[in-house]
Image 1 (cartoon, rainbow, N blue to C red):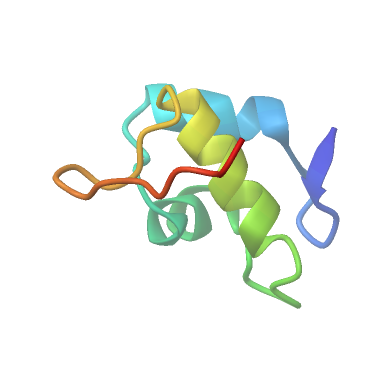
Image 2 (cartoon, rainbow, N blue to C red):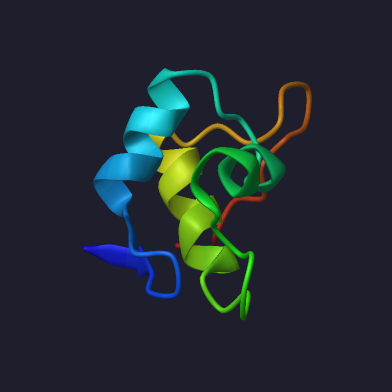
Amino acid sequence: MYVCVCQAVTDRQIREAARNGARTLKDLRRDLGVTRDCGRCASCAHECLQEAHGGQGKPGKAQPRLAA
């Protein structure tokens, strides 16, 4: 699926970038151009990046838990 329409970036490309070392949105912007134009893709791109890293956020930071 397209995550960033402005730069034609897909979730597959984000997963590949994660495998190649991307850890942050800044990395995705540098590598793929995500959020370079309108920025509406930022939350979806961040979610795809987290999923690619097994749902982990930044190292050393606890992730909030959703109430069941």
